[in-house]
Length: 436
View 1: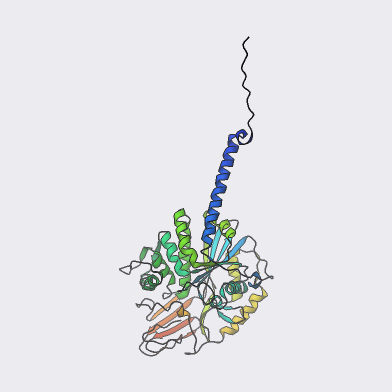
View 2: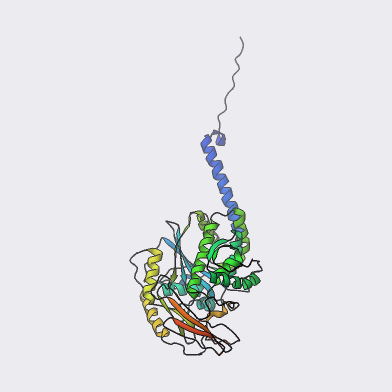
């Protein structure tokens, strides 16, 4: 009788016994883990290009009197006009912004703090907001914002503002609508921006209003303009516009473009973000959306003070800080702290020490003294006003003459002359422009 052959079936064990969906899940998960690990390794490698600084949170003036919002992360952004690439103490912050990220909605709001805003510094003195970074570095600048604005900022990013040239070129340039005056002033600023960065640009001619596709040199030069109606207030608005346009384009960039930006920009950035924090926020980058922007102080006057120069005076600090909190966080029942109210009184006292004639005051022309307007746009016999959503705008008059100069400013109106003498900033020269 023939023997029936039997084949014993082996029982599958381990991976072979899993269902197809479990296999797919494990393979996909493993692949994703590998990608994330590779990405983390790349970012870690890039982190070596950053200038990292630790801030002592005990010295950041975070008020215990204020019930701070927990659903937000507030970041201080500083744009430095550093020609030598130094990002630390000794550099005035040409640009000061607060970026507030709503962790739930992923909305980011930007608030510019006007660089000439009269505030109280760490040593109890009253000076321009941009002097805090110069005197005390990033820690002192963050502490200044927290102390005067009742905020809880612990993170900062400082960048050589000219680094944005590389970013803008990497995203393919920006489309910006310009006025006649902006075209002229931008062309003039481009000369120095190009010289400092070593980047090229094409001069816009004829110099007429229109919407133009600007490269990095042109876009940064546009954001530096202060010699049109609105002066420094309008410049801060331009800077917010440029950053908003960059953010919009960055969300559609390729990985190669992002890598190019990291390589060129990271060496020009100083921050106290850690590697893990950067990876954590980067993974949600595509979910972020840029919301409204504003300038601070919204209600203000301008004046010329002894030993300080031309300043923006909050009218009042308490009311402006309240508006800032409402803008960033909504109506959450916040009330200004006793610290802010005390600073408010100090600002009123300091603002009474007005400059008279050539009293040795100075302005921040050292920040952009590389540029002298080449045309009459906004310079000769003009009267302008600018209102950034406030009741007290910026106004000014300017006249040109051949004699010496002396400028005074009273109640937000300023007057300067151009000639062969010294201007109201205590500078001297031949044909040097009058400054605020």
